[in-house]
Image 1: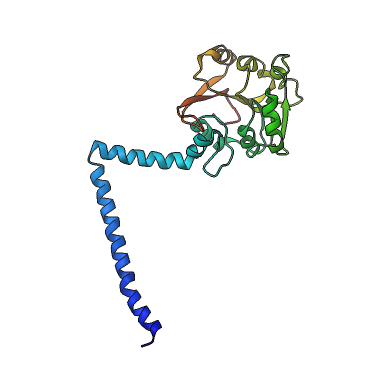
Image 2: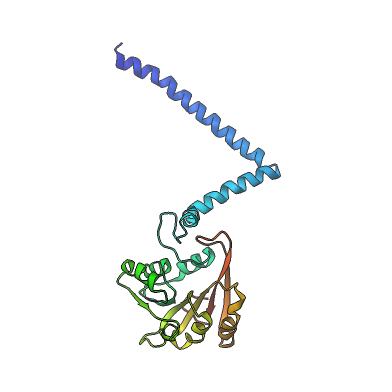
Length: 240
């Protein structure tokens, strides 16, 4: 018997032993999990473990650490709560036109999902930083809040929009200036709608026939949950 055959003969028992150990380990872990489920402390341990996996898969761990809204694989995400993000992601269409007050990774996220995006930014430094990253289907503009060019930028355009995102400065004024810029069936997405100081703007949209759908939950970067809302009318572009 040569050395090769000797090596092969000795390897077979070790392979079987490895499988045996693996099966025993799986059985132990399975039964340990069942034991944990029988106690309050054990269920907490399981819950924290699963929560950690959820946060990893959502990319929250990376975004919280970097303070940049991103997914698990560092893809850009809007800085809105996850439930609203998931809702929009399922309903956006490639022929839609979007306008947003406030810019950043949200602009890049919109751009991958719709036809065109116009993004209006008030902060010159942030604008200069983000400008090189903007794709061809984004018109990225800087406008001043003080002289009202920021507030009025959307209604001065020659086009109308399926979605208007309020997530920047002067939010109440933006809400009051967005109606004539919406297409028939257009919707308004408003972030941080758990903030009471914008109540006048929420009321304005409701008084003009919009319904309000609130989403609440964790989102990128932050260690707390918050609200993002969709204001819509009947026969809207999101199928609400």
